[in-house]
Amino acid sequence: MHNYLRAIGFNQLKTNTDVDNFIFNEVVCEKNKTAEFAAEGGSMIREYRLKVGEGIGVCAITESFRSGRQNMSYFPYLNNPDVSTKEICIVERYTEKESFAGLTDEYKIGLSLIFFINNPCAYRQLPEAGKVTEFRGTCLSAFCNAGTVLLPIQTFEMEDEVLKKKQEEESLIEKAKNGDEEAIETLTVADMDAYSQVSKRIQNEDLYSIVESSFIPCGVECDLYSVLGEITEVRTAVNTYTDDKIFKLKIISNEIEFRLAIREEDLLGVPEKGRRFKGRIWLQGKVDFTNPVRHAAGESM
Image (cartoon, rainbow, N blue to C red):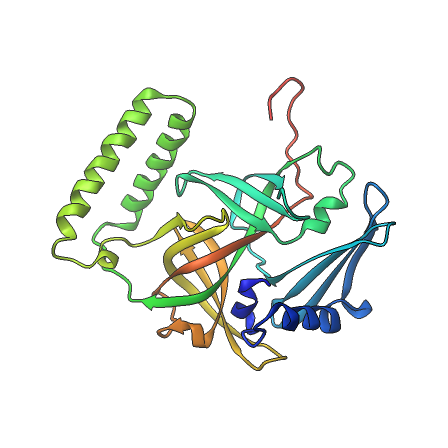
């Protein structure tokens, strides 16, 4: 059972049987079919998308084999029309299931961002699927089952000074990744200074009055993150099946902008533009498969 169906209002689906009945009775039907094509090996793949509110819904993907065996996967989706990152996205298939993960090296947050790809059929229909694995342009979205709204913190640096520092840091991270020892040393010293400053301030201040935003891997699954970020837009949707009110928040954390869905009852506090969101999220992304990255002959991927 997918844990994050709750985030779009399906908290009443308590067991695998409840979820299976809903998927087979409401989602997997001809009127919801959005894709159908033959895959390598002769299996038939079908995609179904059930819209349950403005911009939110449930996707189910089935693969039928000649032997009569059938595989199915399903997940909630949240539409995000905005491109979150233009960094190269590498597509990798999950080992144990017919799903794909995306990976981008984000200098803004200093780590490799891994997420669940929510438009896998668009990839599998490519003539070069499995051969071309790098693309540019990803729209990120996320789901949360328990979040908190925090007040913003007061900053004393000018916006242009902050931007200059971030650009310098991104440049250093890129150089360090390419083996520049001076850049590595500079970043190490900066991290030690930051740690020293936080250690002193934490004795008299609350952690979230010091840390403005964060984007940190959380748990054993690679697409789960603990995030703290600024709310830049608040919209709502109503699940037409359960009448649950869903907050659709646009959040920017460490310069990564994404949209997030969470039930009103699962969010502590009132979300408003300028306030901050804190919570554990499941990250997914829609990759622009029309924009592949081509490498010159002899160049490594």
